[in-house]
Image (tube, rainbow, N blue to C red; front, side, top):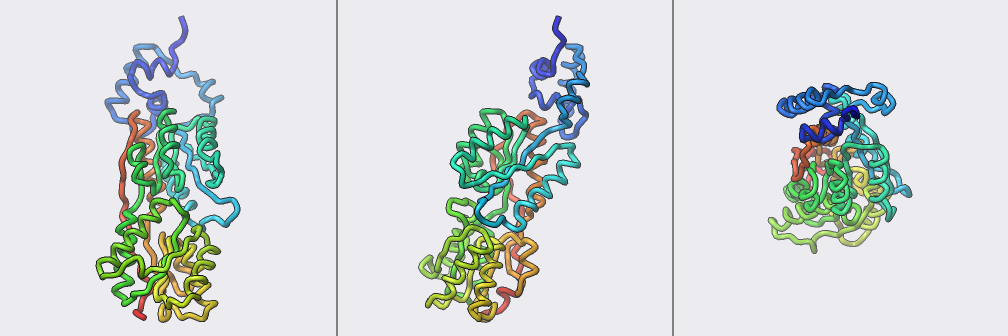
Length: 343
């Protein structure tokens, strides 16, 4: 008679293979009733852990991959990815999760297939997707079909039907920026957007426009340029916007890196900040405090977001249940010298 396997235990207990593994390894975040069902199946089948196979496999606990998007032809975001990774790593250590990090070229047409291949090769139990991969509904459907749990950082609305989306209320955050600048007396705006199709960043713009509409202004009162979330693109876009004849008094940037580039462009043009032009960012990354003047920005809890993503994946895998919907974390408007006084 063949020796019972971990798959036999999982089938009898009615749970996933990874849940059995978590119970046998005495890991946290497994409901007591689930743990009891697994142990009953173990006893009934007379299952014994094959320690040699476990050691050869080199697996200790759950394995989760965080996928970072990168344009290999430009500089990376200065802090966004590292903050998410730091939060996820700390949570992984406390929960006994092995965290892998993969960087994938977002401009590669085969990027989604590469992600699936890497996750399968690494035998991952779950994945944390960052934008723009967190907006890819087809990728999420493929992962669900493979039984790989996913959490999407700042994912689009359509992602909520297929996976758990973690993020702040970008619409409200954009509205907060607009309300602040309007209160400072600004009426002629510029806005540097991020990559086209980046759902959360586009939502920030929508919220900003809503704040303007409440004061009788419209999109016609906003000069728009599109950057790539990089310092260089912020510099170049700001130089074009501020060097024009519209005499903008406030420039809103979709992230802090572009806002830092915009500050440099304004300095080169001899503009006083905020007296001649107010400049704002988004994310509240370390660069927002070390540039001059320090940036008004939106704080989003990136490290907490990374940690929460790991926690929710552990819950999903341990309970053998797919999670979908949205979990919203709080944000704050951080007012600094780059927008403090009215023009």
